[in-house]
Structures are given as structure tokens and as C-alpha cells.
Length: 400
Image 1 (cartoon, rainbow, N blue to C red):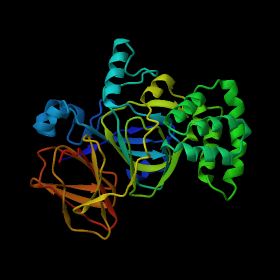
Image 2: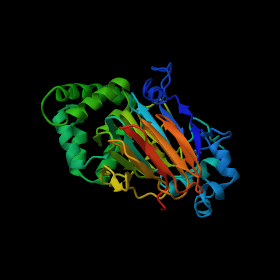
Image 3: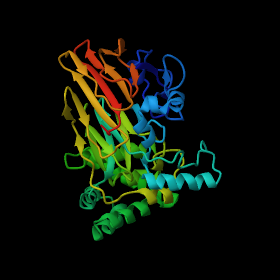
Image 4: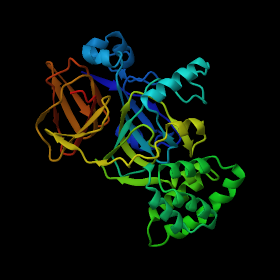
């Protein structure tokens, strides 16, 4: 077990306070801080406090750090990537590919000679990127396509004459194919049409957002997005998605093909070890509509909100994915020594309070914002919360 130092990504949508305060730095930070990455992704690996990157350490001794069985299964790589995400502004409208889609897309772009760091590259690796977000604060997001009937009702409540034809299109085919047709129509509209349609939508959103009827939150979100991204087709596409609010400790997972956009809040994000993102709008970055349409799933039901399943003193957030499993320990009130689940490589992160990690004849103190790497050989560990309110997250795989 060893303490980690973790890189921070300074994307424009990030917070100037959340990560700064988590790490005990001056707040507000001089620039937005969007994500802290904890793991061994080649794009930005964590560093071991004793020296060297976690990526290099795993590459040098995959059997020792991952365990021989996991090293074979995951081709000598850490299968998950843990992040602390802090969004003050909306992220782009996006989806992630399946494993087969990622492999095909990656090889296609490799053959085409597109540099892996090119702005117009879709597939930066050959892995899929299912993910889970667990809220640290109240967390707002657009997640997956809403049922067609509910979206038709939303469009009727907005009562924007310029949207009537589109509402009729979906009402005439209220299924996945109707959603695909409407989404494709909206996302490919000429800019001249968008420059008229989005302002018309704003007027309807103002009326609904300030009223006392249904869809007020959806109208406020569409209005806010249209103000940030005037004339962006993603504003229309966002009308098709479920708007959810997670309370701290609640989580939702996003499988391949789920169109989503995180709107605001801080959370713990755990995913397969990939950086493949296909964007559909609400961003100045590269948008590839044909490729996005290849991966989107218009038929999936909205993923459930997870509150965690008891696992001893921990709560575990179950998903269908082998690459990652998130556990949370909340010491309310303070508890004694708790066993840290064994099994493969893990990363332990303290987000509140202070804890002591013990095992193998040694110990580490974890303050708020501190994290530790636990290799496969680091077994029979315990962690003790040293103050009420201490909160710990444990990331690993789900192989048991």
C-alpha cells in the first residue's frame, strides 16, 4: 500500500473550489479544476508517493500488482479509472461506445493515421467506457432517452408552434425508431434553422419554467443550455433526455450508448479505463454525428438510481460491469477498525474526515483528499475512521 499523488484536469466547465478545498489548497483556485484522475490511464497516470508513476509500476510487474489471474484477464492493465468530478457548468452531450465498437473504431482511426491526441479523433484507445457516478453533493444530470410519450407531452406543454411538426413526428411513432428519427433530424438541422428554432424554444421555456405546472426543471435546464450554447443543436437534443437529481450517496451507471450530460455538482466517477467520448453538442470540441448515431441506444430504459447495497460496514454500488466496483464507507458516528475487502488492485480515497489504514506491519494516515494504492498482495487490511463523518470510497473490479 502506498499513497498517491493524482493529476487534475483543468477543463473550462470545472469548479474553482471543490477540488481545491478537497485537497486543502487555496480556494478559489486560479483556474477551473474539473477532474482528479486516480489510476493508471496512459493519458494522465497517478504517481506513487515513493516515486514513479502507477502506470509504469503496473507495466513493470502486472502479476505482482494486479494478481496473475487479473493480469491475464486485463492484458496487464489496471481495468478501472477513478475520478473526482467537479462541474460548475454543463459537460458536453455525449455517449460512449461498446467494447466491439471501440475496437473497430480504434483500428479504423489507427489505419487512417489520425494522431491519438488529434482534436478530431474519436477513439483514443480500444476500450469501452461504461461508468458510474456517485454524488458527493446534489448532482444534476441528463441521462438516457425519456419515454417518447413523456417527451411528446413535454413538447406540447412548451407550446412552441415551431416545434409542433416535431412533436407530431414523435407522436406518430412513439418508440425507439421515432426517437432516432427526431434526434437525427434535430442534430443535423442547418444552422439557419437552429438560429430561429432555439430562440423560439427559449420563449416557451421561460413560460413553463416560471409557472407551476409540470416540466419546470426540464424547461429551466433547456433555457440555461440555450443561453450557454445559443444556436446549438444539442439544446434541442437535451429535450429528449431524462433529467435526474442525485442526493449525496446516490449513484447512477451509464452503459454503452447512453446519451447523457452532467449539468452541475461534484461526484465520484468510476469507469472502465478508457477516454473514448463521442459528443453530440453543447461543446466547442469535435462532434461526429454519424459516429455518434452508430453507438446510441434509443431503446434502453433509464438506468436505476442506486443507493448502495450493504456489504459489511461498506455500501457497494452494483453494476453489470466486471471492470469496476465502487464501495463507500460513511462513519456516522465514528466506527472502529473495518476490514478492507480483498481482491485484486484497489484505490482507497478519503473525501471527508481522517482515517488510518493498517496492514502488513505498516500504516498510512488518510486525510481528506488523500488516496492510497492497494495492490493484489495488500490483503488483510483494516481502515479506521478517526473522526465522525469520515467518508471513504474504495474502487476495484467486481471479480470478487
